[in-house]
Length: 199
Image (tube, rainbow, N blue to C red):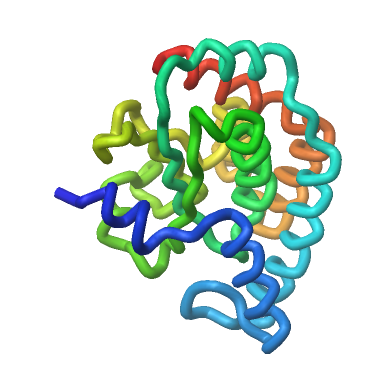
């Protein structure tokens, strides 16, 4: 059993520190995790732009704001992520906006997946280490809801269909990010509103 309180307080990164780490590593030709290939560096550079765009353009909708307003105690979001992960770039800034809207109710920390594989392996998606994975903890460090992630359910279904069609990972990536661009974080916000209503 993991001591999530200790991990949250002493091992995980704030969103600002996570963003700084990704930028600092890119500046020296690296990304998070052990693989610093050109491919992952390319993804990471694109993801920095995606995070900036989501940070700048996301406005929390009324459904999510109402759900936030109705939360009665403090919770902590522990998110498994990596700088090269495209889904994380589209989703983690939305979580940060949500936490920033109610700092008395929520705290956010990020864990790098590849440094914490033993935790990651408790929260696999279809047998894979897909991220981001969001754990909701109470102040005692207990996980209070099933994990959320790695992407909104409707997009997860689309991705499964694209894989069954035999599309390669590059094409699937294009389709995924096209979907995110059209959706403008609304499905992510809808799912987090539903999640908060369970608290």
